[in-house]
Length: 461
Image (cartoon, rainbow, N blue to C red; front, side, top):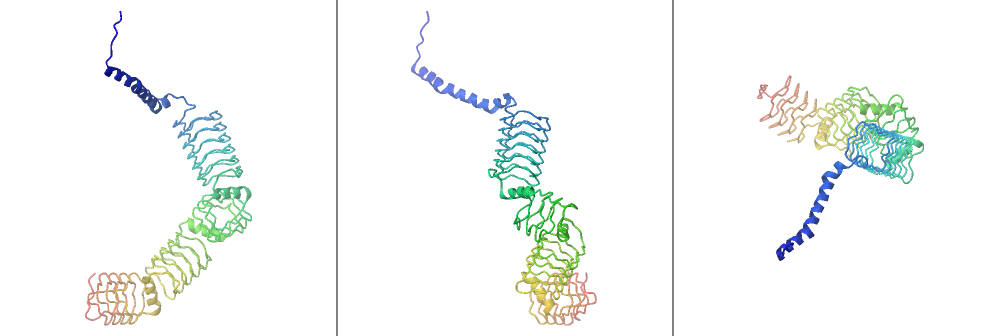
């Protein structure tokens, strides 16, 4: 006979809590752990292939429609003719993969890395390619109707014969590139357009207005640019070769921007309005050159001969002109903000109120061209200035900074140079007769042949 066990109210309450709360909680925890640790490990591939490494695998002609390949590595894999319709390739690695003729319709390729991928004749209708990196990819004859290519990287991509329509979501820049590649550029307004990184190989751009266009890192090999106007175009990193039909003047601009060649002979060349920012023109002979309205910001123009050059309205911001010759150059309207003019010859250079130049270098220009005799120049900064042969007789240069200035053969007779900094200053053949040099720093100054006051001993070097 079974003895009936009587449970106390407390015991019944505990059992009720276990049944109502404990068991469901345990089931939920088990489900969570299953989803977090075990489901992916036990799932078969396909259909669950997330993060799987297929590097270099031969997967041609496979049928993986709707398969999950999230963050999978398919770099250099052969997927020729594969069916990946509606597959999830979210942030998958597909660099240099062979996807020729693959069916990727409605596939999720958001953020996929597809550098150099071969997508010729691939079906990408309705695919999500937002943010995908398709640099150097081959999309020839690919079907992109209805595809979302928002924020896609297409630098260097081949879009020849690719199919786009009004339902394709793509930036104006890349739609223009596609149009140029497939329809040519005749009659298109391309002045100032952004074509950076565009693959324009073999494109017909005859007579096109490309003034101020950004062609940096673009590929124009085999392209026909005969008669095109490239004034002010940005050509850094542009790929062109002997197959590119391009006028000599634009080829010269490209060569200057893309090759480091010191001491170029460019006498009298016309580079007006050209974009030559950061160009290496060190030691170049640009005497009499037309550089009006040219962009020469940050250019290396050290030791460059610009004598008699036309630099009207040129932008020389932060350019280095150390030891350059600007004699007789026309600098009206030019911008020389932040320019290094150390030891630059400014004799007979034309500067006016429209010239943007620091007070320091404007003063040096004034002294060179107008003289400085009897002038009030106390505490003036004339360090590194080319003041050779200038007349500074009886000028007040008390406390002036003349470090490393070139004052050879200058007339400093009776000048006030008390407390002036003349360290390492070139004073060869200078006339310092009667000058007041009390407290002046003449350390390491070049005084060869200089006429010094009788009471000033030649300092020991």
